[in-house]
Structures are given as C-alpha cells and as structure tokens.
Length: 173
Image 1 (spheres, one colour):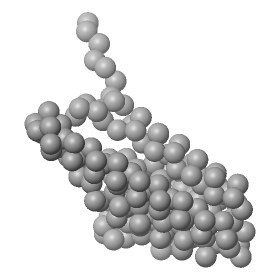
Image 2 (image 1 turned 90 degrees about the vertical axis):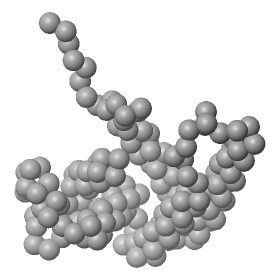
Image 3 (image 1 turned 180 degrees about the vertical axis):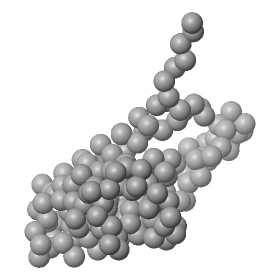
C-alpha cells in the first residue's frame, strides 16, 4: 500500500512540478521510469519520506495555485494537519476480525471507530478554519475534495482479501 501511494505521488509529482521537486542533482523529468525507480530505491527511508513529502506539497501547491507569498505558511499548516490526522488515525487499529469479537467487544470497537472518526472530522474543521486565514475558502474546499479523490484512487488500487485488483485475470485455454 505504501509503495503504491509513494509511486502514485511521485508519478503525479513528476508531471506537475518536476523542476521544483528535484532531489540532489537529478533531473526527474528527463529520467525514464526505470531510472527514477532505481534512484528512489537507493534512497534511505528518511530520504524517501522527505521526497514524498516534497512531491505531495508541490502537487498540492500547484493544484491549488497558492500564491508565492502564502506557500510557506500554507505548507506548514497543511503538514501539521496531515500529521494530526495521522496521529488520530493511529488511535484505531483496524487489524481485527469482527467475527471473533464478542458482542461487547464489537460494540466497544464500533464506538471507538465513531470516536476516532469524530476526532478526524473535528481536526479537519479546525484546520479548515486555520487554512482560511491563509487561502480562500474555495481553495480549502478544493484541497479536501482532492484528498477524497486521492483516497478513492488508492482504494481502487488497494488489494482486497489478499488479491491484487490490478492483476489481469487468467484466461483458460
């Protein structure tokens, strides 16, 4: 999942703003996909994370057409928002089998999912208010709309029940 997300962001980042998303002396735009993959695979996990963050930020800034004077403040807020969302999501462990839970355990897990969902919504509202101090409301709305589209794209690519949904079905002779 992380590799798919990483690759998607990188490919999208190359198309949108490759000149601003360079790491070291690489000309990402002129590299073929195999070369890019090799360079990325040779990065440390920290460097990959930083590169992904840079591509994501560039993609969002480009998509929202953020004014140069607001880029630093918006990027800081956006990264804080994402970090808070990540911390909230970490409060819920989705790796469980509902069929093995007792009624009380299932009710508690369901309640916990509602509480985490509410915290995510509250965080989103709080940062929407903060972001509107930097960018127009229309752009905040566009940001959240694009987040939803990215999530949908990732869910389309996500393997279900251990099966890769992107794999072509085998045909019988």
